[in-house]
Image (cartoon, rainbow, N blue to C red; front, side, top):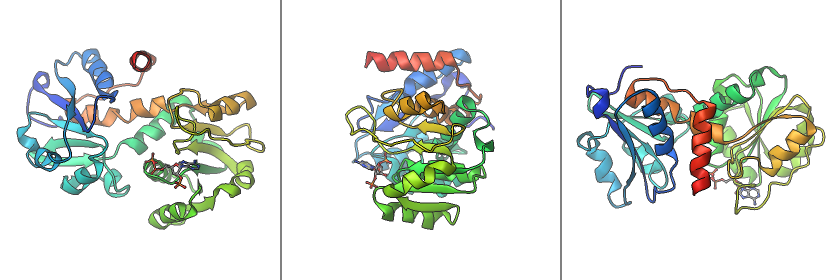
Length: 286
Ligand code: ATR
């Protein structure tokens, strides 16, 4: 990929925009990579109020930033205002990463990439076990994951959701690879599952627990929870006890940052145990 702007690397600055944005871990990740690569650029938190976001994006070329990440509540307006969107954005209807190219805004969604890259790193060969993928949840977090699973060639993806209509909407959007189901179908699906993914917020600190009986799930199945607070959710703990390979959600957070860094700073960074530890330390500090 080409460097995104003609500025020297040392002058490049990227940011994360949101309202509020003080909770974002992205600066920890990108500053670590900047330092690892010896780039004197910067990555900062940029609070942008809802009544300023349209102006901010419209005038982005004069902001001094080479690009940004977009977080709540600005994702929808960013999707509407960014003129050049990659398939990852167009096909998921969302974007989280923006960069300037020839003075024009471009956008992509890196969540699906991050999800699959994390699986590849933490559970290599996950896509070679026969069986179906079962995705729990059909909200905003499920969409890029289903997109990425399809892009990887997974042929059968069951989307299991409390509100079946939302799972049906995902199936209508993505086509017949995606099969909608209600929560009560889960026990019957488990025996043919090779990948089980929680995309709901259940199990996250402060949320109700995700209570699933994993009886019948093959031992070869990989269980992935995109929740990362706590790092080992009850779902992952029970999967680990049965001998299943488990994948936690922190890796997805780290991997989804890779394509943005490469666009802005021209170098492909790596997700390493050292980066993971630095982000864990930052989370422990609150
Ligand atoms: P996100 O953008 O994080 O995915 P969302 O769009 O609100 O957030 O989706 C949250 C997901 O968690 C949905 O699949 C939701 O199920 P519904 O579509 O039926 O609401 C699921 N979810 C949240 N709380 C739940 C609960 N108590 N039981 C079962 N599913 C729940």
